[in-house]
Image (cartoon, rainbow, N blue to C red; front, side, top):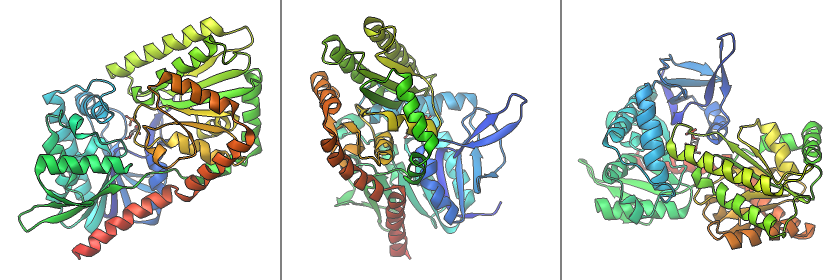
Length: 470
Ligand code: G6P
């Protein structure tokens, strides 16, 4: 295989394998933000993408889809259980999200994580051209930067961390805390969502490894002298253009009206859109909304909450329990408050295509983002991008990365149920002029700091490092 100048390494490939009823195989662009974020970069360079096709025991040769060269990594059934569902999503994910669910520490899971990280690193080292660039993504692959550097000292290595990095008091629980820090420090530039994440990481490096840290630069000692590593915030964003295109389509606007009609024309539609994940604060949001109905501050004839909860990591216990909890709560509230014509909550445990999501955003008077901890939260930015009419109110948890940028949202602490109830009422009752004032400023921020701004600033920082080495 030819080598590539620019290699992206992520747990998932940018396409999903779809097997038709007749057994035929097709590939569909996967809906994740990372693909949309990197597609423009990938198309402008000689690039390749190393990742997993999302199914166990699938051995595939490298292939091209949507003009991107893909290098699939095979995972056995046991590796899916131990590396992906286990260490990535039942150890690191809960630990890095402030132990909202208790992290599980298992030595076999760690061993599988090391083995699979090495497989990704070897594939990347094999694919990248002399003096090329490797860009590693997210918490599933924290050891890859160091492993690639050992195999290919000539390449420039970037790593971007899409989820939060925890405070030292929590991070210190991880039995393999030093190995993970060393793994990440194999990169030349380590990007985080928030300044706080970068600071927590730098503090962990100082305390655990006693490396010298000045401002955002770590001096990593090596056999041939020390190597500078930049660790800094590069807040990610969305590709705004497909959203701007869709809101201009008459059929999408008509669909937004149809959604409102199908709900019996409530005065206000509230919307939540999340993967069904315990970090998202879905339970807190629904509880607050249920209390507002019970207390008569909201009336079921006047409001509907649409909650889209897309299925996620369904074999991990914490997710199984969460689903039961949410579905019990939703049916209790609906049972207590619905009339024949109106439903308090329209709950959808499904994923939808982007067109339908945009119609929902246009129909929603209030968008509820109440995550207990979230690296960024791109749903908040998607909602804002669609509101070219300068209407609608975003209620936004201060525990999201997005809260650092979206200062004109109605900010909430989702743990404070009374505060959350007041914030929902503020949003429901907000005058159009005030909505417009806030939305204009939010849109300016999102349209200016889009995903292209994000990838360019990260890649510029990487080339600055390369220039220093040259
Ligand atoms: C988060 C993570 C991504 C991950 C996505 C979906 O956004 O930061 O790395 O791909 O969730 O989760 P999944 O486990 O389905 O890949």
